[in-house]
Length: 86
Image (cartoon, rainbow, N blue to C red; front, side, top):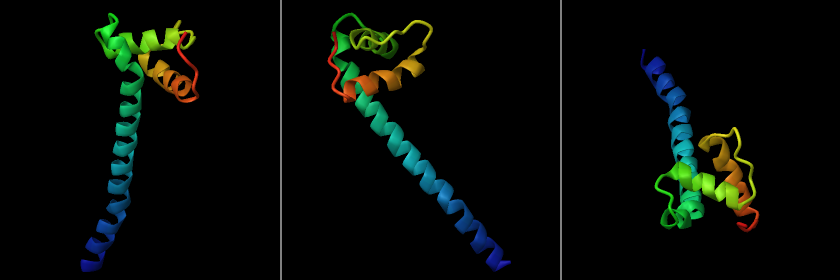
């Protein structure tokens, strides 16, 4: 019985590590996104969605038919490759 308990603890450890790594990646993505969209909040954007849409338009990304979650990686990629807003 003791071996079985020990085995179960080991089996659950990778899930905890994976969750922590996932949370770190999410935090990094949110930090990068906030840096990119921060300037838009003083220019009439009241929500993250509005700021992402404005950033997409400034980077020449067609937002037609795309929601905020679809635009975020495109906006981040455009900002990180050095494409300047129009």
